[in-house]
Length: 433
Image (cartoon, rainbow, N blue to C red; front, side):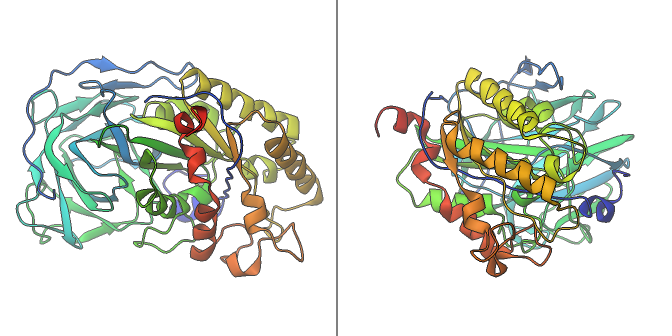
């Protein structure tokens, strides 16, 4: 399957997650944006032995929390002298905005010579006065090595929660495989040449449904605020939810968290359509990308694991024990990083072309392990939420998008509503809070 064919990729998608239960092991964790000061660039972040990844830039401090994220994927070959105006939606408020530009799948360095951040007014047009240059180690330009990423300097000023942030980037020399995220479900914009400093939309007439190079945004929120990262497949990625309305289940979860008196408010959606726990295919496997997409994000307190259906329906002979071993490795690595793991049961998919009784048997065994093993810090039963009362192997019709695998907007909201928000704040649970 060619990474350049989005329609072909979408035909291979999947998804699923769950949460609820016991806890153990704690973790630590303005509208107008002003110009940032200089910070010296230094290499940070340990590399995962399965997916080496280095982040260049001033390291995140303990006060920073991810407010938006998207998993890195290999894209089409890049085009030099192209600009991208990328629209992303924040989850938690904070100051000192920083972005991360990823060249994880590049085969050569890529230079970004102009990067700006502002607030969206409408379409590609920005709120007047809100568009400000980002720097990297005090410089206006940054060269990101192949397989690495770069953190910007902090940008003074406050960034509200639930805001459409617009990051405009330009590369004079991009070539070879680009890095980005295919299924953005958000309209962003392209230009020829460098128009990043412009607040107007005149030169941003081309649209795209993917994000390019940008894979994380962080802020310095009120003291004690932490984040949850949703690690998943196409259901977490939001497939079949409504474009431009932020109706993925992690979006609904972020809305709930903002009105909840807890410490977890940041939400990073690290779903990839077609993703598997054990094998590469729809992006790198969850095991291989865990460090880059999840554990390297700042301020993460809890990882919400909702994967497995793609491993099962791929008909490669994966057994329940194979998947359970994968889950255990994720739990071990997340706990070793001082964070908690909430797991979701694998949702039903009867009616999807790859469903068969053998896969259903594996799904049942896996879900029994998730519910009863006690190896996760909490469990949410997404299977119970989505399954039809008359046929538990199928998605209930009121939540079915029509493909018998992915929930529609109502189903996405039902998943978020099923999460016990207290289970995401493992330090509070651990201390009896």
